[in-house]
Amino acid sequence: MVFSRTPVTLAQAGQLPLWRRPIALLLLTAVAMPIAFSTWSALLNNFVIEVAGFDGIDIGLLHMVREVPGFLAIGVIAIIIFVHEQVLALSALVLLGVATAITAKFPSLGGLLTITMLSSIGFHYYETVNQSLQLQWLEKLRAPRVLGWLVAAGSAATLVVYLTIVATWKAFDLSYNTVYMASGGLTALIALSAFIIFPRFEAPNPQTKRLILRRRYWLYYLLQFFAGARRQIFVIFAGFMMVQKFGFEVQEVTALFMINLVANMVFAPLMGRAVGRFGERGALIFEYTGLIAIFLAYGGIYYFGWGVVLAAVLYIVDHLFFALAFALKTYFQKIADPADIAPTAAVAFTINHISAVSLPLPLGFLWVYSPGLVFVAAALIAACSLLLALLIPRHPAPGNETVLSRLTAVRPA
Image (tube, rainbow, N blue to C red; front, side):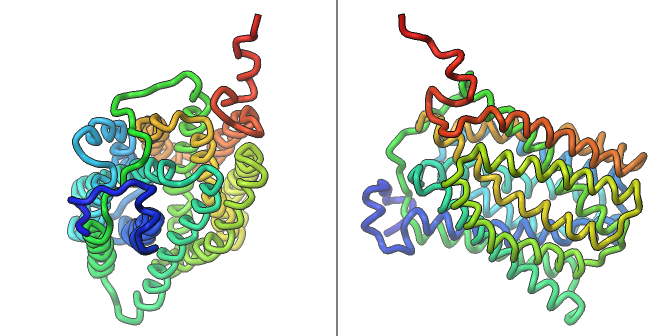
């Protein structure tokens, strides 16, 4: 069966061998993406400091450029008019792999900005469409548990990458170019193989192929905005702190990432069960409350001179909360019109990246002035998210999108 010539409905896909079903494709891409992206992330801070000579402003600029394609993810709506979502997801994954493979060949600010832009287009367009496909292909009752397992699978793939880096970086005196080429090339190869292995799956609900902004999704939009701000501060400055303040080397940063991944493999499926049992409201309240404490403790490292052990523990715990990110996905899945999933995924990515594009550079300047203030700002952002999470109803559904919905609903005469 050839992928490009044989569309298969989700009902028909149930008759295929397990290794050719939609869940298998989601699992394969969940493994493939982190191979390139996690390698890029693990080496980035050391690469830009040791080879490119970056400071806080440069790293802020790099991440601002990296987030521009996420801000433009709304363009997915136009592309899926002509390109099937599954084809677009795999094509974007190939681009991510190829761009990652050639990263070390451009060790200058201009070169890194260009290559980062290309890899970011691949990453963000893949993530946008992948989120849409997950919500279209997974049943609502099973979605939290399956998403938890997909997170765990991605964590397992990343763990293999980190173990390989830790075991071989010094033993074989590897270069940045060798590691980037190997990881990016493998991701591209897996994505190309998926074109051949899997048929094109057709979801039962045709997706609306135009821009959609619905008033009843307003809480989801706001939560996405603050989630983008929180993610940027962790991704950019928590890791940068470990290298700049505490002098972590490549293998030490990678070992820290590796601990995170083991924890994610264990806790992500459990968190999926917890979201299914206690609901998105409880999961997100727990996440944002914990983040406030973590970011304030990060600030204490600078203001009170707390040491590297606490910083490493906070980094691990902070990363664990990312496993709860799928609670936002399942909240939207429960309140959404099925035809709105693809266009709203694109809109949500754009909203998420408004903060992701606008914050890195000013926070880079703030970092130069006072790193502790960056984490105080992060605690305030988490507090805003907490207040919004309190508006999620215990059982979200169309017509019951927020706890305020019953107050604005039209009452019968």
